[in-house]
Length: 591
Image (cartoon, rainbow, N blue to C red):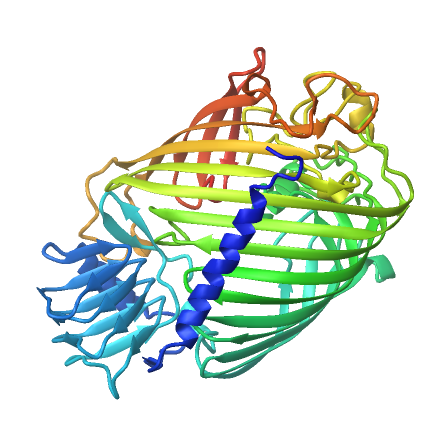
């Protein structure tokens, strides 16, 4: 392993190749497929119930993932495809239903029945679709969850049918929005966004712009400069299934450190209810531009450049429901100055479903080269870095790779690898450092709690007291994390079956629970680079070209119950003795 982590270079090259090939394939097609006009708004509940019933019906040919019917071949009966891409060149004698996926009908295709597509697009090469029955298509997705090998319609998006437009439909839309930043934190309170959004789409071209003013409510609703911000965005996309994009932003925003851990909603709920904020925050003020290529199924590569000013933010005395009299953790100071950033981000998504993935890969990679001048350097614990004021230049990379494996009707083995850190140049600024502790990474260990004089989860040194006084910042220059989970389904119904009750929104008088049991394991650690010439010794510092010995990693095991958008878990450290088990709740699946 080289000092620059050269495995990130082929990753970025591969992402570029995937996007370019996908884009070139679409643009080079001699006969561009036509798209069926999509109905506006959310999928009507009656239609959603109908297609779910077709999937569950005995005799339906059910396909999870991609479905291909070559020319000259035929299928008799209802074909239902879940979360995949359907390529039909043969004959279907019956209905075709595609749930949260796309359909392409070749010139040789023939469907003797209805075609219904939700959560995707219907394309064909002829003057009209080669379908004898009714053709229906909605870009809006249908939400559901699985019970054993059947689907159950969810009712979380009750207002979808009242939306005035579908963002994937042709035409123009204009809105004046009053919304939140979807989080609550000890620096801003609840950030409010107010302003217009305009979108126009014609054929394969879409242009979107937003102009939002930001008001931060954490400082007793006082109208002053530090409580105000803005977020202005404009982007042009050419192509539906693949193409290019170009855009830019003007921003004056509060940004979070280590956004790869937990979601905004989970962080906000923990802050508002329990007075626990699992992130640190800093201010970004500047402008950026980007260009990129994208392909179907969430594959994209994007190149960006920004010029921005970084400053620190202080924690406010924002209210919370529980332990409101307990002081908030200090918001750690960050490096301050003017920075120029060049970034490359890429993603590949082959999962069968984004909300409830059962199979497929998800890959996200980032590269950042930063240069500028620091006017203030944030303090750290002893021996962490020797960065002074003035010029700074660094390179950093991050990788998140996930694999979902379906073992049976309701059983999965899911794997995840997360790695990131310094590649070259000066030591990383505090905004770009890592820690490997807490609910999302290693839940068997308390969030940024120092267990040793040189802690491999946070890279803190010198004991607990000095670290607390700094606000418990993330200090590691590199990190690696491995996660695995084995899931299986369960069903509890205390008073018999309720399949005879049509609309579950109105089910009362019965107690039932359906979900998955989960067994999981996590292992990882962070570290500092050993050739910096600093004073620190011990396990927290590792030679630049090496990965720390596995025996120094932190490891935990756990079990839990996953109900889709709510999970309850317990995790226990197995690499360090004397620690109590941690019980925690997640509002999303672990990964």
